[in-house]
Structure formats: C-alpha cells, structure tokens
Image (cartoon, rainbow, N blue to C red; front, side, top):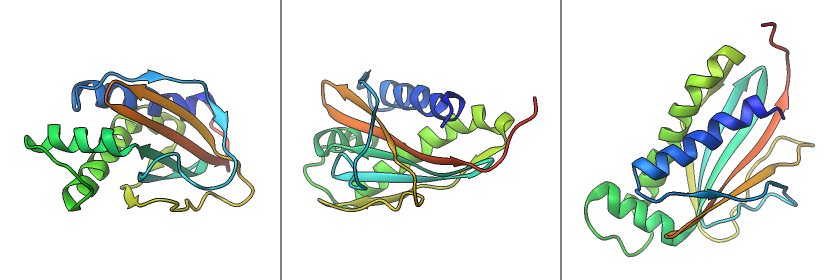
Length: 157
C-alpha cells in the first residue's frame, strides 16, 4: 500500500469529524491487523477499484457513533438504530467523497459504503492481504480507518 492511497482517507477522516461532528480527532500509531474483526461496533466499508483494489473500513465506537448521529440529526440518540446506521453510512460516504478528489489522478475509484454493526462482525478483506489499521481518538470516542488494498497496475505520471 502506498501513502498516496492512504493519506487522502486520513485527511478526509480528520476533516469530516472536525467539521461535521465537531469532534477533533488525534491520529494514533498505525499497525498491521491480525484477523478480520473491525476495531469497533459499527463499520462503514468502502470498496476501492482501479489500479488498486480492496476496501477501506471506517470503524466507529458506539459513543462516537451516537454523538455523530445526534449532531447530524439535531436530536439526542441513545442506542444503535436505523438512524445511527444511516449516519455512519453518511460519514463513510463523506470521507470517501473527500478522499476521491485526490484519488482520481491515481486512476482509483471508491464505491458507496455498506454499513455493518454488532459485536464480532467480520470484514471480507482481499485474500492474502493484511489490513493496516490507523486509530483515531477524540474526546467523544474512538474510531479507526483500516486499509486492505492490493495494487493491480501502475500509474504513469
């Protein structure tokens, strides 16, 4: 995985959570994942196609997801429901949209996100790929962005 594939998602995550959720995030130390369990209870999965293929996983802790949903809807939300699933999908979509601007020159495309929730859900990473996890912490909860990408071509610039 190249930094050019990852950095747009890191920047977009920080920007979206700062502006849309009013929750500044601090990036933690990247690590390679063991297994295919996401870091948190609610996950937005973004497909990645083009000269690199795989997925980007936006995994959000319950407290942060509830806060984000409350901010987006303008009303307090206390548990996982349809609104929370929709809000996490919208956050993943905003992150993907921001990142997409920087990926087109690399001939990469992102798909609409799919949201999964519940303890111990599994992510279908590409076969033979170890995902990289970048954690983020904020006052209102934690989240992570996970990358499982395989390069399938090269870009001539």
